[in-house]
Length: 86
Image (cartoon, rainbow, N blue to C red; front, top):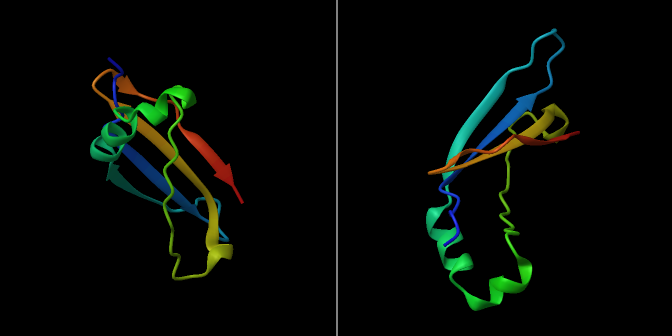
């Protein structure tokens, strides 16, 4: 049986004119959507691939976003973070 992803921690780093940038994060529960997908026979041809889309709203505008990263976790541990820089 596959170990399903339980949650994703998304972190958004904001651009600032100072050396340090603020980082805001939030946890998204994934157990239910991952379970629905991985228990569906249609998922077999995709192996362990799982696509999750999440919209982000930045009150300061999209130019204020420096990067977004996600770390996944389950009962076996925590993944390495995956990031995109803008």
